[in-house]
Amino acid sequence: MKQRMMTIALAVAVAGGAGWWFTQPASTPTVNGQEIALPGAANAQEASGETFVVEEMVLGAEDAPVEVIEYASYTCPHCASFHAGVFKDLKADYIDTGKVKFIYREVYFDRYGLWGSMIARCGGEDRFFGITDLLYEQQSAWTRAGSEAAIADELRKIGRIAGLENEQLEACLSNGDKARTLIEWYQANAEEHGISSTPSFVIDGETYSNMSYSEFQQILDDRLGG
Image 1 (cartoon, rainbow, N blue to C red):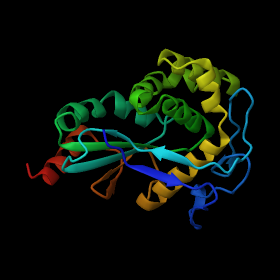
Image 2: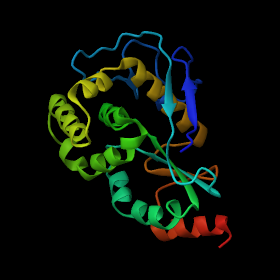
Image 3: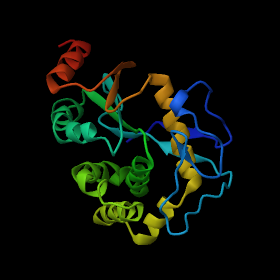
């Protein structure tokens, strides 16, 4: 499957005036003005100057006539509800049938959403959507595990269920450079599309808030000419 990739140099600052999207350049990643300590074994957050490629996580045909981008947070209950219901119908009726190219983009309102994203991306594209399903299915358990250490352990368990090794998980959860790149990528995307809540959807360039499946159908069918 072809992927659209965005390379973001860590030294490039996100455009100003982004309000709560603005991140100070620092050795420790920040979200909403709060430093985001990483849960990896060594909490290795020193900047190395390395540039990462953020993969667009895509389902469906690359040349599908309609593009849908979902912006979602792994700690958002409404996002979990969407993936448990509307998304399954959307996938069956539009994505799997070649009508919609679906792109999933993470939103980071808090450190736990970022940690979840780093777990989901740890296995690459092949495991991403499977881990995403697990994160939403078990959201109430891992987000309410108690301490930060307990939440991190629950996320590691999800990663292991998906077939990731402990060493691989620790490397992903301690990568400060990658965390900063993901945050900058999220900020740039959110500013471009005016994302202030989750889940939000961008359908052929137009931004929509959360909606029912029937509302989705009407928008998609109109764009498909049906």
